[in-house]
Length: 124
Image (cartoon, rainbow, N blue to C red):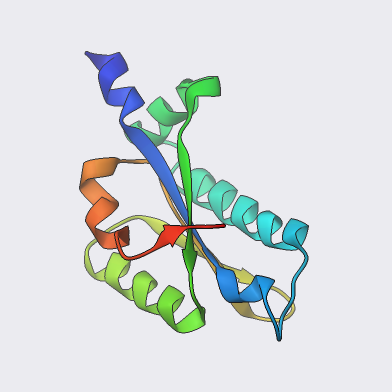
């Protein structure tokens, strides 16, 4: 039974898609780094949470879904919604630019958080 619960855990990462396009035109590697920073920061912050422990124990079977927020406004709105609903997450603020680039949720069962993210598409 525990293995079934572990397989249902997913970490969602929501990255601003506008950073990849004009006028920002960030390199793909820089955008990927933002997602990595946010994912690591939220795992660090919730390292002892049972879902995080189970997620990390999955080793090569961890499931991460990377979604795209169209712009900073959409990212901020999502952060507010997550905060209001008690969903553990981290907003990554790139320095020294002080730009919100990404949100990562700690690992959750998909059913618990998916409805907060259903309006975002997979990052392409």
